[in-house]
Amino acid sequence: SVVLFGPGERSLRILPLLAGIGVVFLTWVTAKRLLPDVLVPVAVLLVALHPALIYYSNEVKQYSTDALVVLALGLLAHNVSSRTDDGPPLRRLVLAGVVSVWLSHVAVLALAGISVALVVRPLLSGDRRRAIRVALVLSPWVVSFLASYAVTMHSVENSTEVSNYWRHTYPHSVIGLPGWFFKLVVLALIWAYVQHFIAGLRHIYMDVTHAT
Image 1 (cartoon, rainbow, N blue to C red):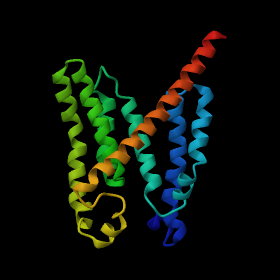
Image 2: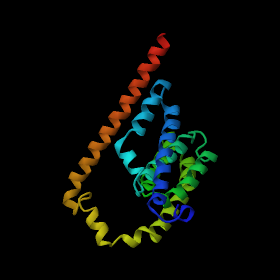
Image 3: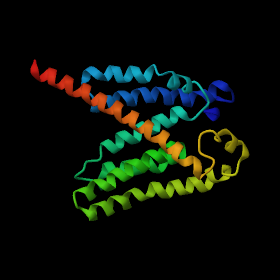
């Protein structure tokens, strides 16, 4: 953005702003696919009016880009059919994954979860060959991440400034791992509750629609 619009604070804020707008748009696309029409505006408003998303869409930070990348990966993963795990939709997901690990650190976590789900899915149906094929097709994003780590993240591994910034986020020793893991489990349970709540609203809406 600096190359296109010149040096300055406004130039630096353009990318986060565009990413924030993209998040709202992809939320609408996701909601259209997963929710009944009556709940689509609710999902879009919750995202569009979220204080943190508004704030980071106006800051020179990567967090709005993180949200945009994860939403895009989720949409691409949703397009992968259980019967064509090695088809074009999966290859598009892998291509996006190869690029996204250079744009967002959070993309690695999203891709890891997506990859596990896509590999386990054929295993549950007893198709080991397809599971291996899916794993091989997914492997390029892992290679891309390793290259990204070697080029960018490895250089800040021993940074005192980075360590001080994150020292209250992660445990300092093995002794602190149980408490830290417990917090993650609580957050996961809250997220699962939110998902079940949304699914419940969807079923209620469908029942009412069919009844009328």
